[in-house]
Structures are given as C-alpha cells and as structure tokens.
Image (tube, rainbow over all chains, first blue to last red):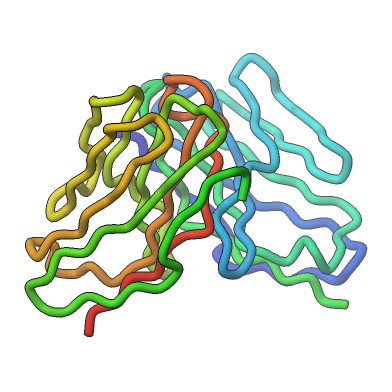
Length: 111
Length: 114
C-alpha cells in the first residue's frame, strides 16, 4: 500500500514569511495529491490539489509542487497571515484507490 | 462544513456499549466515508460507500459497522468489540464515485470512553 511521510510535524513562521511543508509517497502509480487544512475543532478542508501530469499549481498565496521522479510534493504558503495557523495534511492514493494521509503539520504564524 | 452534519459533537461510551454516530449530507454526493483521527496521526479510513446499499471496509474496520440505506445518510456504529474507541471521528463525502477526490468533511464527533 501507499506510505506517506510528512515533514515537519510543527512549523512556526513570522507573519509575512513563507511556509513550506513537504510530503513523500511510495506508490509510483499515485496520480492525485491533495492538501487539506484543519482548523481547531473542525473537519479538514481541501485547499489545493494537483494531478501527476503537472509540476506546479497555484491558487493566490498557496502553491503545490510535484516531483514525480523523487516522489515528493510540497505545499508553499507565501505572505503568511494569522488565519493560516492550522494543521495541514497531505495525502496520496494507494494505486488510484483510497487516500492515505500524512501525519499532519501544525503551522503557527507568529504575529 | 460544506453541507455535512455530524452529531453529536461529543459522545461518551460505557464499557460494553454500542454507540452510533450520525452523518447526514445535503450535497447530493454519491460517496461517503468515515475516518478516525488520533492525536499526532493522520486520518485512517474505517468504511466507505460509493452507492446506496453498498459499502466497503477501509483500513481499520474491525469493531465498527455502517449502513447506507439513504444517499444522504451514513451512520457509524462503534461496537463493544472496538477496544480503543476514544478518538475524533470524521465523516466525509465526495461528488463522484472515485474514492480519493475532493472530500468534504463534517465537523467531527469526539468519542470518549467512561
């Protein structure tokens, strides 16, 4: 099955700086890579996703990059704001089937 | 919460008791899922259903049961066979039958053992 590793487990950045979270996956057949944001006491919310036929996707301050050769993908948040503080999860499908989630990164934005 | 309602928000289970967590969606989504979240861990799939009257086991189905009698509803029962039920339970739905895309999550139910 798919094995997804996520780093770092915690991350603190100054407001306005950039944050980068990285995930590696094991199944070379995986072709879809979402990122979810979970705020305290709430369910995760999809913030961006990428398919394996592109190397980068942007949505305002958020971007995801994918390196299929190295089997890793990263979430980039620029110009961070206090509302970006949350737990972020990456995920990858096991052979086009069910998602396997990473263990999460707790991001804290320091005002 | 994207049209997915989970209840109750907090639930307590006594030894040997079965408890049922409710999940309702008004998004007209075909697929529904139950995940378990433990502190410091990722989400683990318990059961999923791609269509009414059909469901499949996920990675940690032992000690749990589900039903999908209506498109809108996917209740999860935590049975007495689940020896470590304390966790945060998340229900999700997705618009297609693909089991990996565009999940919409509810706000979760925190289950604790008395």
